[in-house]
Image (tube, rainbow, N blue to C red):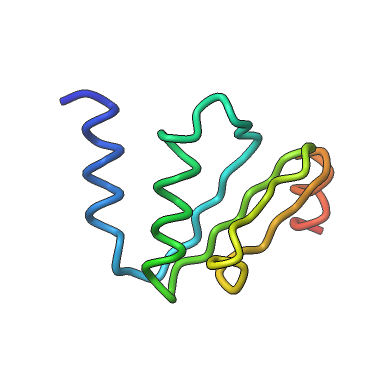
Length: 84
């Protein structure tokens, strides 16, 4: 079984569960692999929280604003702030 298969199996397995999808430093180079499935899950599941952390401003579709907490800063600073 490949890591890609595991990824999509996990997306399917957890789609209706309470979960936090932490997206760390993902730009627009791989949107189909990480961003869009996470955004779709945040849109389809009221108990899913989409949390992107990236230095660059991350546009968030209006439909998932209620399920999104976005951090636009250095990843290390955000993590240090969250842990302190």
